[in-house]
Structure formats: C-alpha cells, structure tokens
Image 1 (cartoon, one colour):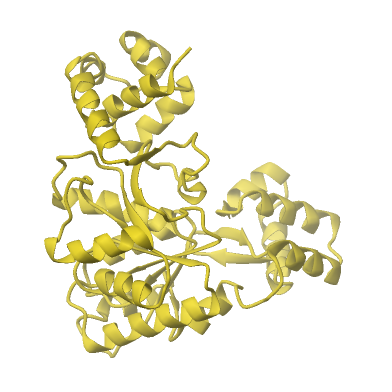
Image 2 (tube, helix red, strand yellow):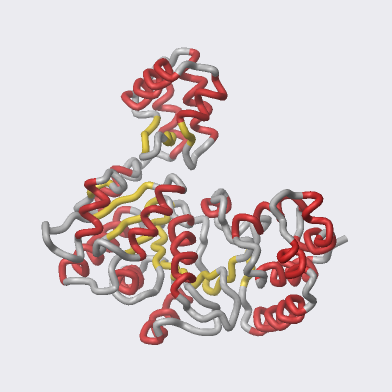
Length: 374
C-alpha cells in the first residue's frame, strides 16, 4: 500500500520533471492513479501511453529527482506548508476541472480555496489614479454586498497589489498566487502585505522552493489565477500584458470575464477596451454590475433559484434534456457536444438554446459555449 508520505515524495519528484508539462502530468496521474505507479511503470510508459518519448522515460529514471524531492519535503514540513493534490478535499474544485491543473499546490494561510464566491482581479503594473479608484471601489462594494467573497490576484505591482490591499483594508479574505516558491516573496516590496495576507487569506503556488520568478512562470501562474475563480475582472491593461493572457485563459476555462472601460486613447485602458470590443469580456462600471451579471444579488440559495426557475417555465422534452445536460457541465459545454450527444440537428439545437436563454436558464459564451445560470 502506498503511504501518504511516500506518495507526496513521488509527487514532488514528478513535479521536478520539466519535460512532463501540466497537461501530460495530470493525464498520467489520472491513468495510473498515483505518482508512485507512474514511476513504477516508467520504463514501459511508451508501451502503455502514446506520445511518451525516451527522453521523458530517462527523466523519470533519474534518481536525482527523488533526492531533490526529499529536500523539498523537509522544507515543507519545517515551514508548515500545506500540499494539495486533486485527490485532496481542500484542493480548489474550480481548478481541478481545468485540463492543465497543477498536480500539486503549496499553500500558506487560512483561506478556503473553495469559497462560495471567488473573484480574481488583475491589471497593469502601472496603475493610474482611475485604476486605483476602480479597484478600491470594486472590492469595497463587493465585500459589502457579498461578505464571503474571496479576492484572488498575483501579488505583483500595480492592480494586483492594490487588489490585495483593498481586500485587507475592507476585512475581505484575499489570496496571492505566486510565480515562484514559498521560500521568497517577489516583489520584495510586497513582503509586509504578504504577511498580513497569511492572517486573512494566504499564498498559493505550484512552484517548489528555489524556483525563481522567470517570465514563463508568470504565464503559468496566470492560469491558476483564472482557474481558481468564478469570475475574472481586468481593471486596467495596456494593449499587451499578462492580464490579457489571464483573460484568454479565463475564457478557455469558461469563466465569466469582466473589464472596466477606459477613455479612447488611454494606453492603460487599450487592453480592457479591446476585450470589451471583441466580446471577450463584459463591460462593468461597478461591483453592482458584476454582482448582477453573476446573479449573486438574490438572497435565495442557488438550489431555491433553480427550483423557482424550473417551476416558472414549462420545458419541452428536448429543452429539458438539453438544459439537464448543460447543468451537468457547470464549467460550460460546446454546442457541438450537445448536438452529438442528443442527435438533434444544428438548426433545432440553436432554436432550443435560444429558448433556454430567453427563459434565463442558460447563457452563451464566446466559442459557442453554454453555461447554466441556475
């Protein structure tokens, strides 16, 4: 039988193999059921799973990864770090459903990563006075309307840091997702704020100690920021930047994405304006807009709303089948999947989806994705 400590050591060893990548690591883990089984079958992986080359097998055969894993385990135990795997109940359920979800998350603090409402707030590192004002009012009002909301960001300069500070100042829990290990804080200027966050939220990373914040690590971090949340809000962004990448990732995960508009010609609003123009993000001007769009304004529970809505409308047999299928996939389902599963012709399916949309039961997203509203 695999002991939890031995399995964690194997996961840490697996985490050190750069040739693997998040998607393939998750796939192998799901196929074999444990990291230890992956290592036990490493010499025959190319016989079991297509696409595995000899260089990966050699990397898995390197005993050095276990030496490093044992060093990391000591660091984790000495610093009381929590390690979350997809099998762990505390692993964020929203992130677990993402194809490229990390096999390991390292956390410090007291935040519930499965909070009822999670909003990621990101933006430029060169926030203007307008961006500061929008960020502060968004989070203050969000917490006033939804005291249980968890604010997630990346602990970077600009909008990220402002989001964490606004959350702390308003008594709102906040989590910083890092692009490096928990043995450091980058930028160092935010170290004191990170300490405050440990008492009212926490820090999360998929990176092991001694991992430095290289540029590509920030892109990997951004997918976690997007995957943790129900909604992603871009406060300010230039025409290029990490915030836009986070918005793209949010869209790929079928997350709701929102952006504050800015003046035409304002370089730090070009990205937000483009997201709104290209229908990649919905325009908001306040927390109230976000709350209404997410249907968080009702005092009823989600189950009560579902019952009330279904009682309000009579659905045809086909409408009910489609609606039930969409409800099974809370993160969204593509129209083509619905057509294949139901054998309903495209024209009829679009008509059914339109009726369900009019009845307030489903919502369309870019890329022909549909999500349930109840």
